[in-house]
Length: 501
Ligand code: BES
Ligand code: MN
Ligand code: ZN
Image 1 (tube, rainbow, N blue to C red):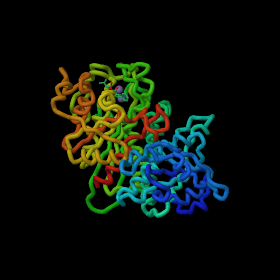
Image 2: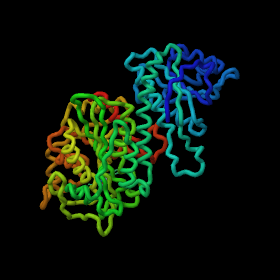
Image 3: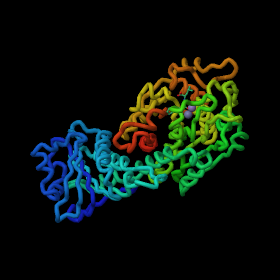
Image 4: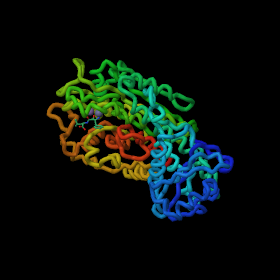
């Protein structure tokens, strides 16, 4: 999907579909829509006079361009009261517009956003949220469909038309940002949608290699190297599959002289999690191809990082593996030696994510000595029980970073909610025979997992984001299907980078 500013007048605009948001209590002048109203033969004003449309959030009105225009249909979408606006509300309203036009979506649409009247610092954010809402809601994964593709439109182009009195540079800035946030999120979603028969550790590494560019380099460690280095935890999780594990290292260099900060982003990359010998139920197995959504967020970030161009170094780490049961699989009772040297007793083979992450975290810290490590992982069912689908769990001791991530999440509609990493949780993961065991019982399941991870980072500030609740099956207007990946994490990391550097 590509987004462009198109500063043509509506008289010249040629489009099958134009989407335009309107705030409640606004008239067509307030929105900069007098031309638009003319083009639809005063339809907006008439609908408001006759109380068919008032701009209430998520309410809609379909109109048609008059015969002297080249505009097919016009969808006006209500945005609620100006005084009650926030970015996510606008994103969701334009997402509803996407849902309403799905069945008849052309390849290209025109979009208008009423930003004038808002504080200068909010205007770009509002326009960006609108573009994201419509764009993200109009993306679909059609790689494996051979029929009825027309029912699953995948939008190619959005032309954003500045309304009357709108500053085109505000719209341009929003378009520029959306040209990172949308393709990054959609790439993460597509990876999450890939079937596990085609997305396995080595094919994941091949996809990562396609992201190489001027400023992005990729290094792959194979199974032999993983074993040689002594990554006993990652090796154990991956050894039960015919598809060997790999460690993918993605490197972004901003190309500036002198010292820059360094961020490490680590993603859980279980291309399939059957649970191992602690096998999941049929229901539990059904969607476990999505257990790589943490690393999909890392991939989404690297897909667009050059375009976003943060002024710091960013390194991504993905420990990719398949967790299966086989004659070669690891077993409950096994004792593993992690890359850090800590021994881990396997209490439950289904708590595999923390094992793969343990080695990836240590490797990230040792190899690049970052200023900060953020990991994203579909780590525990418990986080969904705690927070539902409305926020990812954030675990860290670093107050400053927690604040930046919280602010970033609020802006991009990917909320994070802080959870505790008290040392008291350590007691639950003490083993009788090793330094640690990999589960801590039902109580505080997301917290004991986070405290486990923490043991594998030495001194570097570390944030763990548990996205098991938010990565998949979230009821949001701008996520096209129920049982689809949301692409969570990409927009959060992009926004965070802007604040952190
Ligand atoms: N990948 C799962 C967590 C998960 C559950 C992600 C549901 C997305 C949706 C993880 O590997 C897992 O199996 N966790 C176990 C841990 C338990 C054995 C301590 C869980 O949450 O039940
Ligand atoms: Mn598991
Ligand atoms: Zn898992």
